[in-house]
Length: 340
Ligand code: ACO
Image 1 (cartoon, rainbow, N blue to C red):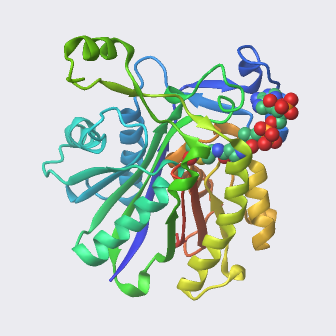
Image 2 (image 1 turned 180 degrees about the vertical axis):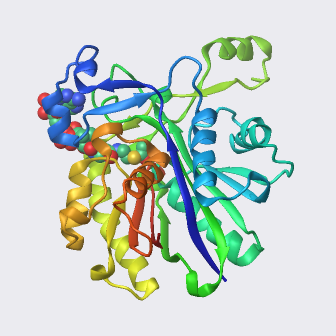
Image 3 (image 1 turned 90 degrees about the horizontal axis):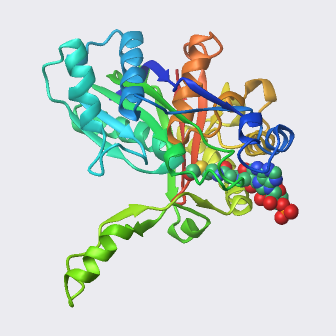
């Protein structure tokens, strides 16, 4: 059995924040940010916008391109580390918007995949496994994150990097000759968590309630998450070393080599990381997809957002081979070889 990508879509918030805007709140400059990262602008959720809304908009566009009715979706995978409900955001994408707006009557399985900037690649691979092993037919894979909600806006080392967005693809069951996902490689290393994390912290108010409440230290304190903490140099080193390796591993599993790559589409974290990986894999610059300058690092959304722009602009054509890789917090990383 095969599975192929039949539609994509994306959505970004309205508010754009430029490097010059950031220079008004932290000690930085457009020159520093653009030369060290390649980022010039990013979008940030405000007002009535929500991550669920962005995810839904991206999903609807993917369904429209695929010409698949919402009723025919049997699995929704929401790849996110910033859901709007602790228990997972995927079910809200389904009934509140897609089902209601389009009259979808089924209750497809919907759940979250949390793996930071590797989330979308894990989602794609999971979709293929559900299709090949579980009889699923139409799987919506959505990458959506709002890291702006977890950024310390006084920390110039991190606040310049991230933006909010959503992207989606529809993965569909097909005959094996049409297979569009044919090699993947996934990893994690919890030891590297110290280099990039947003760990749990105690909520001050509930801490008081907790300690006043009982000599036994019960009830337990409620918690929230701290802002993103990152050792950028270590994360940079990690990315440029593991990404070429994982792509080589996926190519080998697919029975392909570097010369078969039509497009290199990496998680959009830093231009220097993307350029470094392309150089190591000997992929020419004009075969690299990147829209990092406009959106910054949008975590699990970055790959489907860049894919959607490249497909809609006519850059990526049907039948072309894409090597994609995600990497980030966890630490997690992984790659997949796709045919559009
Ligand atoms: N503006 C001006 N100066 C700055 C800024 C800023 N925004 N940020 C840091 N600096 C300063 C530092 O304070 C330091 O000054 P010092 O030499 O006086 O101490 C100097 O610039 C160099 O700092 P470095 O951190 O060494 O700069 P580096 O060249 O490593 O660039 C960066 C930092 C851009 C963060 C880089 O390390 C990077 O991109 N790393 C990868 C990060 C990444 O991709 N993370 C996302 C992973 S995805 C996920 O899962 C969330």
